[in-house]
Length: 259
Image (cartoon, rainbow, N blue to C red; front, side):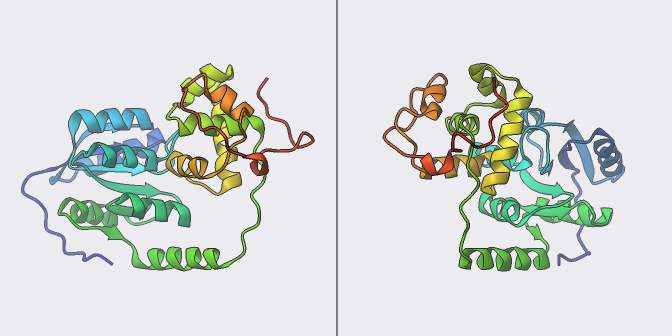
């Protein structure tokens, strides 16, 4: 566990806070702004807003809610890492499951903290991360590694089949399309796309678009399947000569809500 004796920096640490619940966001902003070594330069309530704020302000530390609307805070963290921005990242959440913890570690996120922790621990975490360190509670990390190793050693049941609509959405995500683009191309609402993504994540035990893209690129797809046909309207680079039959629901399975 990190030391409680973190030094207060002479120059305020510049923060961006991304939190999906406005009441929580307001409380975090007021609390952190009350400390003389922190200054909150911007806040956001969704992924697009948080990315825009981080790109514009280049804060020292970004505090990201893992459950941002539409997408995961992991998506924002991944974009920050890929773009080589200097901002260090603290990921917070009411719960953070094993898969999400592993993905955060793979991305190189600097701090992981549960919202149930005392406010002083958030302060210590931010100071530690800003100073170049990492903050991951060791017991949580140990439990995550043990659970994943146990899962890897156990036989894996076949995942529930995806509907054709879910396959199309997965294919579009793999090509880099955003939710609104997918909705426009499939002729459905953005909320329907979000529902499909939620179902896909649940069925495949995934936690982010990054994991979905990785999964999609390693699974065979049928040549000329609805997935390829619909996705080709977004991009002409859809994989060909593959087979995804094992992941598509049979004709008698639950139908999609897409009309």
